[in-house]
Length: 627
View (cartoon, one colour):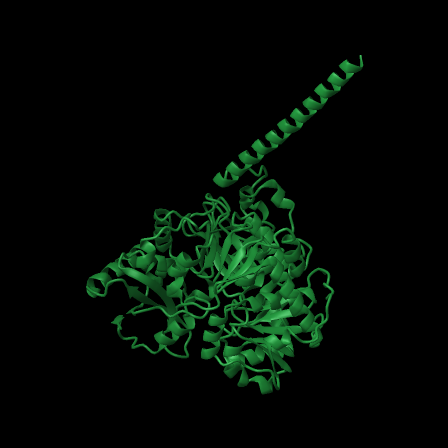
């Protein structure tokens, strides 16, 4: 009897185990089916459609069910970094000029810097200016400030002295962590600033190789401690506080101030919170671009930008990924840099990827090491996107993934999350947790998406939205709009439309839409797209030029770079025919200028201000002019 009972119990246990296995298998099959539906864009939301994006949210079919209720982790950035890598301590966190820094060493160095910051008087809530490129000391300083509850104000090292003074004084920053090569520039403004201490960092500080260090110090004289300056090596050796307390997470607490690119005016300081950075992590997890431990991420996008520090540095490091630090390089070196570092994940502006098409070394090599190739920050003509994708396919790599975003959201708020949403010319679908609406720029009424879509300004709300512009209530009030339901929306300034799948297509920046003297509004991007279709056009940018200085109204001028500089009359005729086919009469270029290169600003975007300046100094009597 006892034996039969034991056999029965054993049988029951085996059945239970099989049931668990069947349940797991059923869940896995359901998950695989769901993933297939997501990839193909076939999920049905089963609700009545209104035609308005903010209500129907048709893009949700591209996301798994668990994503709908997810939210950013409630940690500080330092806590997120430490917790995520508790089992990755011996993995490589940073690679820099041949040096390898493990997560253990990274966290140790952050603790050292945190103790030193407290020892020199930095306290919770203080704003410390970081004026560094992508070097290890940037990473140590950024997370050390977050650990003690201070705020990092991130400044481009090549910014002019007057603008740096404005940033520093507006933040009442007493301490700056500065690259030593910036001293000459900083000296011009330091006496008129709130700065009391400047910690000088050499790009050679983190080099273990004596040969590399000596070569650097031979070329760049070290700034010694004295007066307002404190050398980094002396800074980390001060009688620092040990066992530094980690400040705990508090909702909506500023972690960093990141300055907008300033291509159309004076940059503003966006206050980004812990939620901004950790929210980007959460959203990217469902966007098919989450890196994994052991991968390599190319740290080429500057960390002083929101895109670089959030979508790049923080997302990579909190996923246990090695970040290959690039403090300085020329855009034309991008193809050779990819081949040197062989990263699995890379971000960049369209110009970087277009360079692959022209590079002879790139043509001969395999790029199958690339898993995620992300383009953002500027527009790319659909013709060029097709060419880049063809190149990538022929060299073993996947298609470009694209996105749309701004500093005020810590990077992207729209991304191509799957094959079905990665349509040529599109920028993808809203990140999970975000909602969008598209408003008519004249009536401010929400417009429809789908086959009868309309173009309007994109408004976005979501968990990564900035706190506001630091110490600038006027500009903050212009940026945010609160609707009748109490929802706060951000005005992006982007003209877009949305198709029936919820996929967004970028049309132009409102500030890149000009008004003719007759009052007709003219977008400039369609001009660039049309001209870029010509097989001999390498690059193109359009701007609005005032017909008469000081008077209202502008007309389009196209700046064109040719692959081969010959048969200009024939090319010009063909380009005009392309414009006639693709652009309404009143929106076609008034002038065509053939130049050797298009100017770019420090962020890698087309320098629209420079182009307008070039246009205004032109002889406007000539329709076509060659340089």
